[in-house]
Amino acid sequence: MNYCPLCHSSALLDYYQDKRRAYLQCQECELVYVDPEQRLDAKAEKAHYDLHENDPNDDGYRNFLSRIADSMLERIKPSSEGLDFGCGPGPTLSLMLEEQGHKMSLYDLYYYPSSEVLARTYDFVTATEVIEHLYHPDKVWQQWLNLVKPGGWIGLMTKMVIDVEAFAKWHYKNDPTHVVFFSRNTFKYLAERDKLKLEFVGNDVILLRKPQ
Image 1 (cartoon, helix red, strand yellow):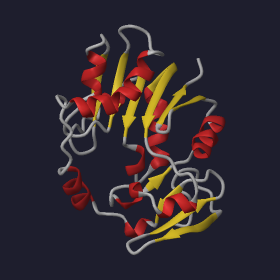
Image 2 (spheres, one colour):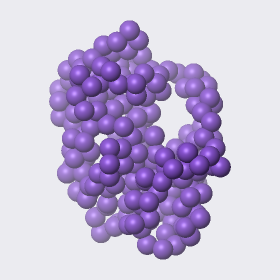
Image 3 (cartoon, helix red, strand yellow):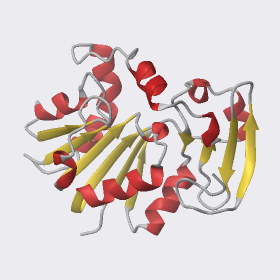
């Protein structure tokens, strides 16, 4: 792939190399991404996901998700309809939002692959620890924009790139299913391009509001 998988720019530079993978950086949107030839195939990717043990009854996991749940609850209207995109095998954020009176739908490529839920629009979409896994972030980003009603919210959780020195020591890049890495500047680029209101909450929650 000789173009950025997010913004399609051909202005690319080698960013980092470790024993397993090579990483490139787009000079337009600043996305850092794994050389596509070094990504897992679908079978190996799902096998890795099957090892995840996300339990809705785990207080620690709920506490982790509360950072995005609380941020969304402060902004969405009562009885809103939302989609948890990439919810995984043990949907939890959706339950937390349902407990607060919101109606939730689920989508996951491997565990809840319903095309029906992608044919509707929602007051908000959440994607926690999802965006770093996307082989086609350009298509999924556009999908999220289309899924959200005017004035609606997209709520994301992901760890963000700081610089190459931090990246070299970063455990987050070592997960073989993590293939694209956003920075604050990447989100700023997308927000400006797509005319979205952008807010950062802490180090890993990103909130974007679609214009009315």
